[in-house]
Figure 1 (cartoon, helix red, strand yellow):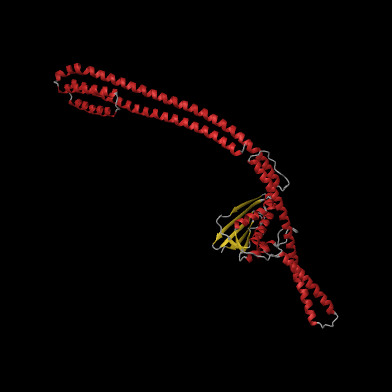
Figure 2 (cartoon, one colour):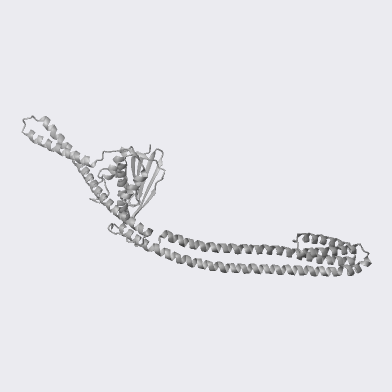
Length: 471
């Protein structure tokens, strides 16, 4: 089974469990919300009934004080409580309790109005005969209604607690199941991925150390197996590429050696040839020394031809200027040095925008410049056990600037101005000819550009900036 299908199944099972928990949680939440809304409505109604009962108790006291004391302010208090009770009754939702109490209260008000209009000596009799029993019945009814609402409110609250507790238990149970299933699926999926991935990691480590004969063996036929197969093919290609690079390096070394020898021989050879020709012009032809001078001139001319041949071998002349992509040149250059950088534990950071325009250059020559700079950076970072190479490309007005900044051993400040001089090198004897940066300088000059070296001193790395016309 492929990793894709395994991950899909694991993800599907977990999503199903999460959705089930979510649906149940939403259902219980909605149910709880409905009960809470009803509880709030009942609580508000209960509060209104309690306020009505309290106002009614004050009203009964007012009517009693009015009968006994004949105080007109008690009548005003009675009327005020009447307005309060009627306004609160209107706020109560329609129902049998509201209808019953409202009708009883209207009869009570009608009887009370008779007391207010009756003579003082008759008020007490009217109160005992017409009002007292209705007053007690209304109070008892209010108490019953309040108790019923309180009981109903308590039932709703208990139901909400029960549902919340049930919801918590079910959610915790499903959550535990989801965690268990997730861990189980995670372990299975992790094992199926990690074992071949571990073999890949070990294989890449061995290959990264330079053993290109090693092959990664992964038995599964899933994506990991295909990845191992592709990696083995890449190593084969890398081995072939390494052989090509070794051959190119040998040819480059021979070219640099030839150029160095040619430059070293050319100056004294020119003096020898010039002096021989000068003497031949001044001496008479019958002079016995003429034959010896002619042999010297012939030998010098032959040496000159050999020097020119060496220079032709060492010098690239075929500049073909065509639009090229700098990013691709950088990538190809890094591909050439990938094995050496990996074995030297060098990290490469590229800050190259995707929208850089193509510029007209001789791509092979500019790539040679990049390769020389990167090779120097690798050699500078190798003594430190690795480091970081930051490659940055950016447009600056009409110029394209490419920076190579390493964390190597750096360059002494007094030597920074001499790095482009012929045969100047800071490498150990036999490890450099001192012509790489000189050739690079000449190539960039051919492109009407410039190359700059910077360093803060020994141990502080170095930076080489290549500036090429973008137009």
